[in-house]
Length: 420
Image (cartoon, rainbow, N blue to C red; front, side, top):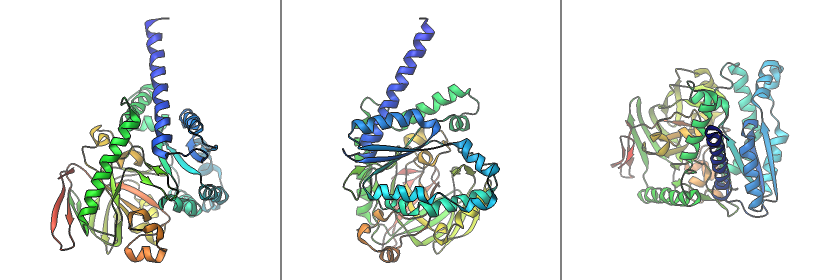
Protein backbone atom coordinates (compact mmCIF):
# COMPACT_ATOMS: atom_id res chain seq x y z
CA UNK A 1 0.00 0.00 0.00
CA UNK A 2 1.36 3.43 -0.91
CA UNK A 3 1.81 6.19 1.65
CA UNK A 4 -0.97 8.20 0.01
CA UNK A 5 -3.38 5.25 0.09
CA UNK A 6 -2.55 4.55 3.73
CA UNK A 7 -3.15 8.19 4.63
CA UNK A 8 -6.49 8.18 2.83
CA UNK A 9 -7.51 5.02 4.67
CA UNK A 10 -6.58 6.58 8.01
CA UNK A 11 -8.66 9.66 7.20
CA UNK A 12 -11.66 7.48 6.36
CA UNK A 13 -11.30 5.57 9.62
CA UNK A 14 -10.98 8.80 11.59
CA UNK A 15 -14.08 10.21 9.88
CA UNK A 16 -16.06 7.03 10.58
CA UNK A 17 -15.05 7.20 14.25
CA UNK A 18 -16.25 10.80 14.48
CA UNK A 19 -19.55 9.89 12.82
CA UNK A 20 -20.02 7.18 15.43
CA UNK A 21 -19.29 9.67 18.21
CA UNK A 22 -21.77 12.17 16.73
CA UNK A 23 -24.43 9.46 16.62
CA UNK A 24 -23.64 8.44 20.20
CA UNK A 25 -23.85 12.02 21.45
CA UNK A 26 -27.11 12.55 19.55
CA UNK A 27 -28.73 9.55 21.21
CA UNK A 28 -27.23 9.68 24.72
CA UNK A 29 -26.99 13.44 25.25
CA UNK A 30 -29.29 15.06 22.70
CA UNK A 31 -32.22 12.67 23.04
CA UNK A 32 -31.56 11.06 26.38
CA UNK A 33 -33.25 8.03 24.84
CA UNK A 34 -34.81 5.62 27.31
CA UNK A 35 -34.61 1.83 26.94
CA UNK A 36 -37.84 0.56 25.43
CA UNK A 37 -38.66 3.90 23.78
CA UNK A 38 -39.48 4.27 20.08
CA UNK A 39 -37.66 6.81 17.93
CA UNK A 40 -39.07 8.69 14.95
CA UNK A 41 -36.30 10.19 12.80
CA UNK A 42 -36.39 12.40 9.70
CA UNK A 43 -33.47 12.74 7.29
CA UNK A 44 -32.62 13.37 3.67
CA UNK A 45 -31.22 10.62 1.49
CA UNK A 46 -27.83 12.38 1.66
CA UNK A 47 -27.84 11.80 5.43
CA UNK A 48 -28.19 8.02 5.12
CA UNK A 49 -24.74 7.15 6.59
CA UNK A 50 -25.37 9.23 9.73
CA UNK A 51 -28.97 8.04 10.02
CA UNK A 52 -27.77 4.44 10.00
CA UNK A 53 -25.23 5.13 12.75
CA UNK A 54 -27.88 6.89 14.85
CA UNK A 55 -30.18 3.90 14.31
CA UNK A 56 -27.43 1.58 15.56
CA UNK A 57 -26.73 3.74 18.62
CA UNK A 58 -30.45 3.96 19.39
CA UNK A 59 -30.84 0.19 19.34
CA UNK A 60 -27.70 -0.17 21.46
CA UNK A 61 -29.36 2.21 23.94
CA UNK A 62 -32.40 -0.06 24.06
CA UNK A 63 -34.78 1.52 21.54
CA UNK A 64 -37.75 -0.72 20.81
CA UNK A 65 -38.17 0.58 17.25
CA UNK A 66 -36.51 3.20 15.04
CA UNK A 67 -38.61 4.55 12.16
CA UNK A 68 -36.91 6.90 9.70
CA UNK A 69 -38.74 9.09 7.18
CA UNK A 70 -36.47 10.08 4.29
CA UNK A 71 -36.83 13.08 1.99
CA UNK A 72 -35.34 13.59 -1.47
CA UNK A 73 -34.48 17.00 -2.95
CA UNK A 74 -34.98 15.80 -6.53
CA UNK A 75 -38.46 14.52 -5.72
CA UNK A 76 -39.28 17.84 -4.05
CA UNK A 77 -38.28 19.75 -7.18
CA UNK A 78 -40.35 17.40 -9.35
CA UNK A 79 -43.43 18.55 -7.49
CA UNK A 80 -42.73 22.19 -8.31
CA UNK A 81 -42.04 21.37 -11.96
CA UNK A 82 -44.85 18.93 -12.71
CA UNK A 83 -47.58 18.92 -10.05
CA UNK A 84 -50.93 20.68 -10.64
CA UNK A 85 -51.00 24.21 -9.26
CA UNK A 86 -53.98 23.51 -7.02
CA UNK A 87 -52.09 20.68 -5.30
CA UNK A 88 -49.82 23.11 -3.41
CA UNK A 89 -52.56 23.69 -0.85
CA UNK A 90 -52.30 20.02 0.10
CA UNK A 91 -50.03 18.28 2.62
CA UNK A 92 -49.79 14.68 3.82
CA UNK A 93 -51.90 15.22 6.92
CA UNK A 94 -52.10 11.46 7.47
CA UNK A 95 -48.32 11.39 7.84
CA UNK A 96 -48.19 14.20 10.40
CA UNK A 97 -51.16 12.71 12.26
CA UNK A 98 -49.14 9.50 12.46
CA UNK A 99 -46.13 11.33 13.84
CA UNK A 100 -48.33 13.01 16.44
CA UNK A 101 -49.78 9.64 17.42
CA UNK A 102 -46.26 8.25 17.80
CA UNK A 103 -45.25 11.14 20.06
CA UNK A 104 -48.39 10.75 22.18
CA UNK A 105 -47.61 7.06 22.59
CA UNK A 106 -44.14 7.89 23.94
CA UNK A 107 -41.83 8.07 20.91
CA UNK A 108 -38.82 10.39 20.84
CA UNK A 109 -38.11 12.71 17.89
CA UNK A 110 -34.80 13.27 16.10
CA UNK A 111 -34.30 15.41 13.01
CA UNK A 112 -31.14 15.37 10.89
CA UNK A 113 -30.66 18.81 9.34
CA UNK A 114 -28.50 19.62 6.34
CA UNK A 115 -30.62 20.29 3.29
CA UNK A 116 -29.83 22.48 0.31
CA UNK A 117 -30.27 26.06 1.63
CA UNK A 118 -31.30 27.31 -1.82
CA UNK A 119 -33.27 24.31 -3.08
CA UNK A 120 -36.37 26.35 -3.96
CA UNK A 121 -34.63 29.63 -4.83
CA UNK A 122 -35.78 29.49 -8.45
CA UNK A 123 -39.28 28.16 -7.84
CA UNK A 124 -42.61 30.01 -7.86
CA UNK A 125 -42.82 31.90 -4.56
CA UNK A 126 -46.60 31.53 -4.48
CA UNK A 127 -46.29 27.75 -4.66
CA UNK A 128 -43.56 27.78 -2.02
CA UNK A 129 -45.68 29.88 0.33
CA UNK A 130 -48.79 27.75 -0.15
CA UNK A 131 -46.90 24.50 0.32
CA UNK A 132 -45.24 25.77 3.50
CA UNK A 133 -48.58 26.89 4.90
CA UNK A 134 -50.20 23.55 4.12
CA UNK A 135 -47.39 21.67 5.87
CA UNK A 136 -47.53 24.03 8.87
CA UNK A 137 -51.24 23.41 9.27
CA UNK A 138 -50.93 19.63 8.91
CA UNK A 139 -47.92 19.37 11.23
CA UNK A 140 -49.21 21.65 13.95
CA UNK A 141 -50.77 19.03 16.30
CA UNK A 142 -47.50 17.07 16.30
CA UNK A 143 -45.36 20.22 16.52
CA UNK A 144 -47.24 21.42 19.60
CA UNK A 145 -46.02 18.35 21.47
CA UNK A 146 -42.48 19.47 20.61
CA UNK A 147 -42.91 23.17 21.39
CA UNK A 148 -44.48 22.25 24.73
CA UNK A 149 -41.50 19.93 25.36
CA UNK A 150 -43.85 17.06 26.14
CA UNK A 151 -41.41 14.63 24.50
CA UNK A 152 -37.63 14.29 24.35
CA UNK A 153 -36.32 15.53 21.01
CA UNK A 154 -33.19 16.85 19.34
CA UNK A 155 -31.77 18.10 16.04
CA UNK A 156 -28.31 17.26 14.71
CA UNK A 157 -26.66 18.06 11.40
CA UNK A 158 -25.21 16.06 8.54
CA UNK A 159 -22.96 17.48 5.82
CA UNK A 160 -24.51 17.20 2.36
CA UNK A 161 -23.05 18.05 -1.07
CA UNK A 162 -25.45 20.92 -1.80
CA UNK A 163 -24.98 22.47 1.65
CA UNK A 164 -21.18 22.14 1.40
CA UNK A 165 -21.19 23.74 -2.05
CA UNK A 166 -23.18 26.70 -0.72
CA UNK A 167 -20.71 27.24 2.11
CA UNK A 168 -17.51 26.61 0.17
CA UNK A 169 -18.25 27.45 -3.49
CA UNK A 170 -14.56 27.80 -4.40
CA UNK A 171 -13.61 24.30 -3.24
CA UNK A 172 -13.84 20.98 -5.03
CA UNK A 173 -16.84 18.91 -3.85
CA UNK A 174 -14.79 16.49 -1.71
CA UNK A 175 -12.81 19.32 -0.11
CA UNK A 176 -16.01 21.26 0.60
CA UNK A 177 -17.56 18.22 2.28
CA UNK A 178 -14.43 17.68 4.39
CA UNK A 179 -14.53 21.31 5.56
CA UNK A 180 -18.21 21.17 6.43
CA UNK A 181 -17.87 17.92 8.34
CA UNK A 182 -14.95 19.33 10.30
CA UNK A 183 -17.02 22.42 11.18
CA UNK A 184 -19.88 20.18 12.36
CA UNK A 185 -17.56 18.02 14.47
CA UNK A 186 -15.89 21.07 16.00
CA UNK A 187 -19.08 22.97 16.92
CA UNK A 188 -20.79 19.87 18.30
CA UNK A 189 -17.77 19.06 20.50
CA UNK A 190 -17.10 15.76 18.76
CA UNK A 191 -13.43 16.71 18.34
CA UNK A 192 -12.93 16.76 22.11
CA UNK A 193 -11.49 13.76 23.91
CA UNK A 194 -14.72 13.11 25.82
CA UNK A 195 -17.63 14.58 23.81
CA UNK A 196 -20.29 13.35 26.25
CA UNK A 197 -18.44 14.91 29.20
CA UNK A 198 -17.83 18.12 27.24
CA UNK A 199 -21.55 18.41 26.54
CA UNK A 200 -22.41 17.94 30.21
CA UNK A 201 -20.01 20.74 31.18
CA UNK A 202 -21.35 23.03 28.46
CA UNK A 203 -24.94 22.28 29.48
CA UNK A 204 -24.16 23.23 33.07
CA UNK A 205 -22.68 26.57 31.91
CA UNK A 206 -25.83 27.41 29.93
CA UNK A 207 -28.02 26.43 32.87
CA UNK A 208 -26.03 28.77 35.11
CA UNK A 209 -26.44 31.69 32.68
CA UNK A 210 -30.19 31.09 32.47
CA UNK A 211 -30.44 30.94 36.28
CA UNK A 212 -28.76 34.35 36.58
CA UNK A 213 -31.24 35.88 34.15
CA UNK A 214 -34.12 34.32 36.04
CA UNK A 215 -32.82 35.95 39.21
CA UNK A 216 -32.80 39.34 37.51
CA UNK A 217 -36.45 39.15 36.35
CA UNK A 218 -36.04 41.83 33.70
CA UNK A 219 -39.28 43.25 32.35
CA UNK A 220 -37.82 44.01 28.92
CA UNK A 221 -34.68 44.08 26.79
CA UNK A 222 -33.39 47.11 24.89
CA UNK A 223 -31.36 46.46 21.70
CA UNK A 224 -29.16 49.04 19.96
CA UNK A 225 -26.93 48.41 16.95
CA UNK A 226 -26.60 49.22 13.25
CA UNK A 227 -30.13 49.39 11.88
CA UNK A 228 -31.57 48.21 15.20
CA UNK A 229 -33.33 50.26 17.87
CA UNK A 230 -35.70 47.90 19.56
CA UNK A 231 -37.52 47.43 22.88
CA UNK A 232 -38.78 43.92 23.58
CA UNK A 233 -41.02 43.25 26.57
CA UNK A 234 -40.84 39.83 28.20
CA UNK A 235 -43.89 37.70 28.95
CA UNK A 236 -45.38 37.76 32.42
CA UNK A 237 -43.84 34.99 34.56
CA UNK A 238 -41.34 34.27 31.79
CA UNK A 239 -38.58 31.70 32.37
CA UNK A 240 -35.11 31.75 30.82
CA UNK A 241 -33.82 28.38 29.64
CA UNK A 242 -30.56 27.13 28.18
CA UNK A 243 -29.02 23.83 27.20
CA UNK A 244 -31.11 20.84 28.18
CA UNK A 245 -34.57 20.47 29.62
CA UNK A 246 -36.63 17.78 31.30
CA UNK A 247 -39.46 16.92 28.94
CA UNK A 248 -43.00 16.20 30.02
CA UNK A 249 -42.23 12.48 29.82
CA UNK A 250 -39.54 12.92 32.47
CA UNK A 251 -36.57 12.47 30.14
CA UNK A 252 -33.73 15.02 29.97
CA UNK A 253 -32.77 16.12 26.46
CA UNK A 254 -30.78 18.87 24.71
CA UNK A 255 -33.03 19.90 21.80
CA UNK A 256 -30.43 21.54 19.55
CA UNK A 257 -26.90 20.30 18.87
CA UNK A 258 -25.05 22.63 18.66
CA UNK A 259 -26.55 25.11 21.11
CA UNK A 260 -25.02 28.26 22.58
CA UNK A 261 -28.18 30.18 23.52
CA UNK A 262 -30.22 31.08 26.55
CA UNK A 263 -33.77 31.83 25.53
CA UNK A 264 -37.13 32.92 26.86
CA UNK A 265 -40.60 34.11 25.89
CA UNK A 266 -41.26 37.66 24.71
CA UNK A 267 -44.67 39.22 25.28
CA UNK A 268 -46.58 39.08 22.01
CA UNK A 269 -47.85 42.66 22.39
CA UNK A 270 -44.70 44.37 23.72
CA UNK A 271 -42.29 44.80 20.82
CA UNK A 272 -41.54 48.31 19.60
CA UNK A 273 -39.01 49.63 17.09
CA UNK A 274 -36.84 48.49 14.22
CA UNK A 275 -34.75 45.32 13.96
CA UNK A 276 -32.23 44.49 11.23
CA UNK A 277 -30.99 40.97 10.57
CA UNK A 278 -27.24 40.37 10.73
CA UNK A 279 -27.24 37.07 8.82
CA UNK A 280 -29.26 35.62 5.93
CA UNK A 281 -32.18 33.36 6.74
CA UNK A 282 -32.47 30.03 4.92
CA UNK A 283 -36.14 29.11 5.15
CA UNK A 284 -37.62 26.01 3.54
CA UNK A 285 -35.08 26.05 0.70
CA UNK A 286 -35.27 29.81 0.09
CA UNK A 287 -32.70 32.45 1.05
CA UNK A 288 -33.96 35.68 2.62
CA UNK A 289 -31.31 38.38 3.06
CA UNK A 290 -31.16 41.90 4.46
CA UNK A 291 -34.27 41.55 6.62
CA UNK A 292 -35.45 44.72 8.36
CA UNK A 293 -38.78 44.95 10.14
CA UNK A 294 -40.57 47.50 12.29
CA UNK A 295 -42.80 46.53 15.21
CA UNK A 296 -45.68 48.41 16.80
CA UNK A 297 -47.47 46.97 19.82
CA UNK A 298 -45.80 43.62 19.20
CA UNK A 299 -46.83 43.31 15.55
CA UNK A 300 -44.74 43.72 12.38
CA UNK A 301 -46.16 46.73 10.53
CA UNK A 302 -43.35 47.08 8.00
CA UNK A 303 -41.08 44.41 6.49
CA UNK A 304 -38.31 44.58 3.92
CA UNK A 305 -35.55 42.32 2.58
CA UNK A 306 -32.86 42.86 -0.03
CA UNK A 307 -33.44 39.33 -1.31
CA UNK A 308 -36.47 37.08 -0.90
CA UNK A 309 -38.79 39.86 0.26
CA UNK A 310 -41.82 38.23 -1.33
CA UNK A 311 -41.11 34.99 0.56
CA UNK A 312 -40.71 37.00 3.78
CA UNK A 313 -44.08 38.68 3.22
CA UNK A 314 -45.79 35.35 2.59
CA UNK A 315 -44.15 33.98 5.72
CA UNK A 316 -45.48 36.73 7.98
CA UNK A 317 -48.89 36.46 6.34
CA UNK A 318 -49.21 32.79 7.37
CA UNK A 319 -51.52 33.82 10.21
CA UNK A 320 -51.92 36.67 12.69
CA UNK A 321 -49.34 35.21 15.06
CA UNK A 322 -46.71 35.04 12.31
CA UNK A 323 -46.22 38.82 12.64
CA UNK A 324 -45.45 38.51 16.35
CA UNK A 325 -42.58 37.03 18.34
CA UNK A 326 -42.52 33.69 20.12
CA UNK A 327 -38.89 33.49 21.27
CA UNK A 328 -35.98 35.69 22.25
CA UNK A 329 -32.47 34.24 22.58
CA UNK A 330 -29.13 35.66 23.71
CA UNK A 331 -25.86 34.34 22.28
CA UNK A 332 -22.40 35.86 22.81
CA UNK A 333 -20.48 36.83 19.69
CA UNK A 334 -17.56 34.74 21.02
CA UNK A 335 -19.53 31.51 20.66
CA UNK A 336 -17.60 28.75 18.84
CA UNK A 337 -19.85 29.09 15.80
CA UNK A 338 -19.36 32.84 15.54
CA UNK A 339 -15.65 32.37 16.24
CA UNK A 340 -15.41 30.03 13.23
CA UNK A 341 -16.20 32.99 10.98
CA UNK A 342 -18.43 30.77 8.84
CA UNK A 343 -21.90 31.51 7.58
CA UNK A 344 -23.64 28.14 7.63
CA UNK A 345 -26.85 29.06 5.76
CA UNK A 346 -28.53 26.82 8.30
CA UNK A 347 -30.53 28.13 11.24
CA UNK A 348 -29.41 25.32 13.57
CA UNK A 349 -25.88 26.76 13.37
CA UNK A 350 -26.35 30.43 12.51
CA UNK A 351 -28.79 31.04 15.37
CA UNK A 352 -26.05 29.86 17.72
CA UNK A 353 -23.62 32.39 16.31
CA UNK A 354 -25.75 35.41 17.19
CA UNK A 355 -28.52 36.63 19.43
CA UNK A 356 -31.83 36.10 17.68
CA UNK A 357 -35.59 36.33 17.79
CA UNK A 358 -38.22 33.99 16.39
CA UNK A 359 -41.45 34.82 14.65
CA UNK A 360 -44.47 32.73 15.53
CA UNK A 361 -45.21 30.03 18.07
CA UNK A 362 -43.97 30.47 21.64
CA UNK A 363 -42.46 27.69 23.74
CA UNK A 364 -44.87 27.22 26.64
CA UNK A 365 -42.02 25.84 28.75
CA UNK A 366 -40.66 29.41 28.83
CA UNK A 367 -43.40 30.61 31.16
CA UNK A 368 -43.81 29.47 34.75
CA UNK A 369 -46.01 26.34 34.97
CA UNK A 370 -46.73 26.74 31.27
CA UNK A 371 -47.55 23.06 30.86
CA UNK A 372 -50.44 23.46 33.31
CA UNK A 373 -52.00 26.55 31.74
CA UNK A 374 -54.84 26.68 29.24
CA UNK A 375 -54.32 28.41 25.86
CA UNK A 376 -56.30 31.34 27.17
CA UNK A 377 -54.15 31.63 30.30
CA UNK A 378 -50.97 31.42 28.22
CA UNK A 379 -52.23 34.15 25.90
CA UNK A 380 -53.00 36.37 28.91
CA UNK A 381 -49.35 36.09 29.97
CA UNK A 382 -48.20 37.09 26.48
CA UNK A 383 -47.56 33.74 24.77
CA UNK A 384 -47.87 33.95 20.99
CA UNK A 385 -49.76 31.37 18.94
CA UNK A 386 -48.95 30.58 15.31
CA UNK A 387 -48.49 27.86 12.71
CA UNK A 388 -44.83 28.88 12.28
CA UNK A 389 -41.69 29.22 14.39
CA UNK A 390 -38.86 30.84 12.43
CA UNK A 391 -35.63 32.10 14.01
CA UNK A 392 -33.58 34.91 12.48
CA UNK A 393 -30.36 36.45 13.66
CA UNK A 394 -29.98 40.03 14.91
CA UNK A 395 -26.82 39.84 17.02
CA UNK A 396 -23.29 40.94 16.13
CA UNK A 397 -20.12 42.37 17.66
CA UNK A 398 -21.79 45.79 17.29
CA UNK A 399 -24.97 45.05 19.24
CA UNK A 400 -25.58 46.36 22.78
CA UNK A 401 -28.37 44.96 24.96
CA UNK A 402 -29.70 46.35 28.23
CA UNK A 403 -31.93 44.58 30.70
CA UNK A 404 -34.83 46.82 31.76
CA UNK A 405 -36.06 46.27 35.30
CA UNK A 406 -39.66 46.56 36.47
CA UNK A 407 -38.71 50.02 37.76
CA UNK A 408 -37.55 50.90 34.22
CA UNK A 409 -33.89 51.02 35.18
CA UNK A 410 -31.51 49.99 32.39
CA UNK A 411 -28.70 47.57 33.30
CA UNK A 412 -25.93 46.62 30.82
CA UNK A 413 -26.45 43.03 29.77
CA UNK A 414 -24.36 42.67 26.60
CA UNK A 415 -21.86 45.08 25.10
CA UNK A 416 -20.44 44.66 21.59
CA UNK A 417 -22.09 41.26 21.48
CA UNK A 418 -20.53 39.93 24.70
CA UNK A 419 -21.93 39.34 28.18
CA UNK A 420 -21.18 42.11 30.64
